[in-house]
Amino acid sequence: MVSKESIFKLFASVVVVTVIAACSNEEKKKPAADSTAMAKSNTVVTMHADTGHLVGAWHDEAIKTEDGKDIAYEVISKGNKVYIQAITFTGKSLTLNDAPPITSSASEIKKDGDKYVGVNSPTEVYKVDKTGNLLIYDGETLVAVCKKIL
Image 1 (tube, rainbow, N blue to C red):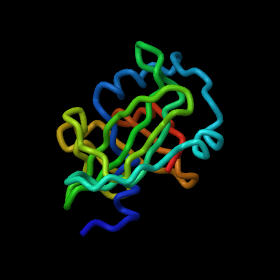
Image 2: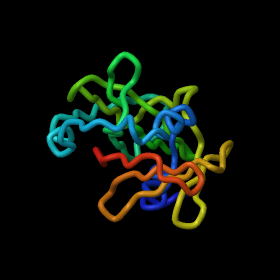
Image 3: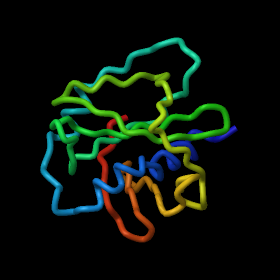
Image 4: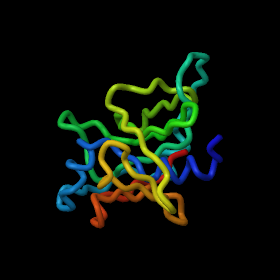
């Protein structure tokens, strides 16, 4: 069984490959809404389905989708596996599910010392810093700092 702390650290390590590519351009970073205010506006919805368990969520304030939606990452555990996946939302209308489905775009991650790495892409590295932010690396290069939501 994976400890809650390990899962939290793992979540910090994982991100979808396409998101890393989008995050790699530091010039695209734009200021976003206050993460404290955003966290207060979030709603957690309980659903009873055969899905994973939500470990944590982080907002990537630096990028948006092509249609202007905000991006967040959720880390999900299911059995002995941990996944990270991108989700989108508009404004402060983020709804988190404590038992989210694991989508086809989710990436499996695994613990490697004090970080997590992508199972299929070992250059994807995720760490959670002392303040709870998710740090996303492409190899040794920091590509994104995502604010903790949950």
